[in-house]
Image (cartoon, rainbow, N blue to C red; front, top):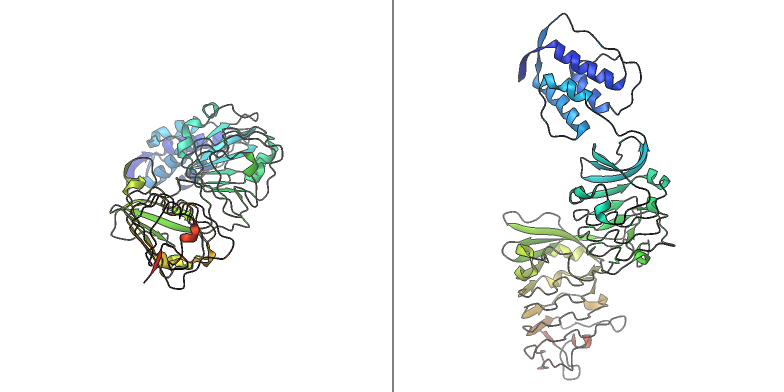
Length: 463
């Protein structure tokens, strides 16, 4: 495919525009011009030499030559304009660059916002620069004061480049506030030295990871620093911040939200929510073929989640609202996990009436609020190993429809290291153990999560 006959003067004009911007006398073949435009960075070598028009006045070129040059121009100016060959020289001459050593936030073509301190508009995390903003080292008093605030929903990841450590920024308040699509921050060690971080990560509901090889929070304050970070999980012990967590949890190690990329102890499984109301939990990252997927996401096996906001079925409104989840299945491949925490997994799924595959699970530690306020009538724990359980706090609370809990005849809770007040709070007299023990408001402790016998009343039935 070709653009047909074209004056060679058009190519000469384009080449001269490149030479002018770069300050060189280099001769360019047509297929070298796109790369030459991409390489322009505002540096002028001071040796511009224009070339005159050739004696041959016209020729034929593939349209890909001009498509590539147009793409290179758009890559430089961030526009979506289309350029005819005769317009390209002017577009190249109109290019300008953000030059000089400055602290910048650079948006890349990959949806990454990179913070760096280098000479010129560059990015080192992949892709090409799409836009950039100079950052005030003294920080910002609100999220709307940030120069990049209007693109906050476009950001998928944030990278802090090693050069950022030279900026000496101490006030990081609101820096990532309402980055609702951001899943990951890396290079956070180069933020060391900040002393103020109020609402730094507030309303970042997709954020799962903040990577840092080191970090000291000495002298750091930050009210509501992680408010709304419902999916954020620290890499040491699965710590998840609460809505009121401040700077004290901005650390590596136990009880911290940071993750050392060289020592990440987390594992992930996947949740797929289909239009027939079923939620499937599996080790596979691929949804089932032939089914209509409503929403999906991954869940950290070790996470100590503190409430709603981490599953695909707990949207605020619409089809992902938890009221639409009617059944749940733990796939057979979930047996491969040796550590599982299910805090709040089905909390307040008021129409969840069926749960299958519990027998595929081992290594379960916490079931805190796992089934609270669900509509299940029967739960089958046959094949489930209860020996690793540690937390049954409100696990079956307000399950007013629950009638029967099945388990193996060998079922036995750990003799120590387990707690769980109000495990059966606000159930109903519909719940009856295999030996006839009827639920009562005075019998709601986790100890009743046992086989019902004459000497050990409980709510489990063996079959």
